[in-house]
Length: 224
Image 1 (cartoon, rainbow, N blue to C red):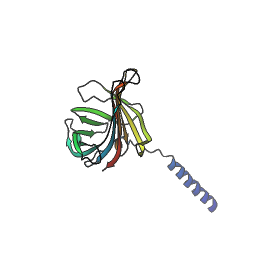
Image 2 (image 1 turned 135 degrees about the horizontal axis):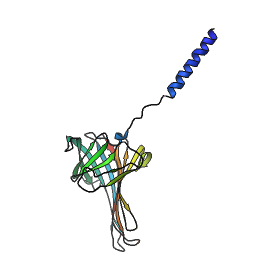
Image 3 (image 1 turned 45 degrees about the vertical axis):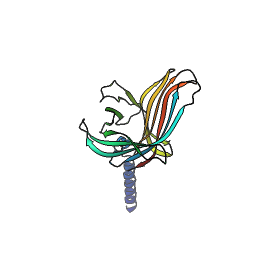
Image 4 (image 1 turned 30 degrees about the vertical axis):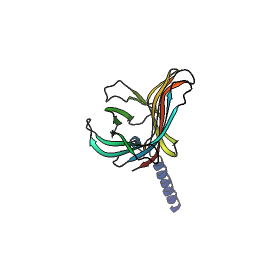
């Protein structure tokens, strides 16, 4: 009798463990981790820009410098949401001081991240993050509709000198054809926020002549 009792208890334990392994955990959406916002957070970026004159034989002008964004304070914006005032500074090189550029603000809700710059508010992230999700990034502004969409989500990726466990890429504007190349792409990393921004606006005047500019902003340090 004792032998059969031990077998029964063993089978009961195995069955309990098996049931625990098959328990389906509720889905948790970590989308908002792509947009950390707290007073004192500071992002430093490397800016690499190129300008093309459009004249045959002219070499493109290149410029490298640093940009620093720092959250200074919080306030309630005209949409009734808590917003964070961000100060943008730039530095032309190691021997230069940081110079004030401008201020802008960001606010985060359950369904979106808003950025207000030059009196224009854009929905730069839409929650939850879904593959190929599209939205009107200009819905809070008086201008026309601007299509935003997720080019990729939750990707393990190397950006600059850092490896990020989870990145999401947003294409804000895009118009690429034989006449021109125009787009603005932003990449966010969970726990870090914006880690890169790519902008290009070039007119093709017959190869190899181009007119316009492009730049890439890449995160090199994050403090909180």
